[in-house]
Length: 262
Image (cartoon, rainbow, N blue to C red; front, side, top):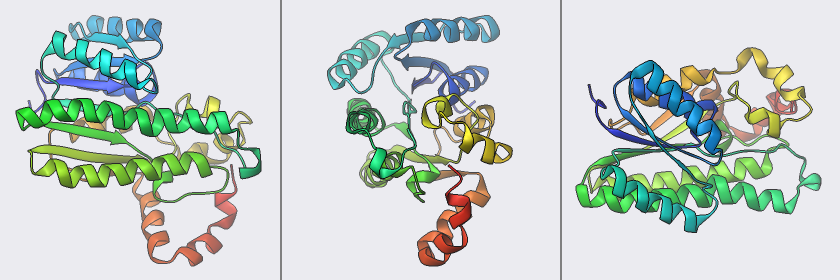
């Protein structure tokens, strides 16, 4: 009942966690608004929601790395739906490489999507929520933003940036009645790894510990419109991140073998 009839805007909604968040939000009688680059996939997700839950979600093609397009699409979105109750900044990608193999254009694209696009979407919606003194911004970060490991230097840097931005935003937003949550999942069984880990070695090594997108989506939807600071999944991995903060040298020495499984 908490999110029934609420407009839930989801970036990266054409697949993976974003797609599953859209389904779960619709199941709970919310009104998903779908954003992604792949318009054909958005149509398919929208049709599935309509067939299953008898809701006709709006969808908009958006590449969040194009900040001009972010402004234009959100202005159209505000015109169409008037109210945005929840923004889920889910769009993002990663590539695992050793530092000497980093492609600088790839690095720029990763920051453009994971960081600059997230901030652009947030700023546009935040002004809208601030006027209403209500809303919830949920940023999908990563356990990599809390504990960086080998071959994920650029990806981890983007997620560290997301967490820093989210922590600052949370303090600013609280005085305006807006909730802000960081979601830090570990590896998830999605097509993320088709790009991030083209060799397949990392997935093969950690497959038995991977989360399902459905489980993550249910957790994300369950905290919508609540003052939840962080969601960390799985719990055992977050314990590792907390221990690393307290005893970094020990954790890096003990966990070295596991960290190099990429």
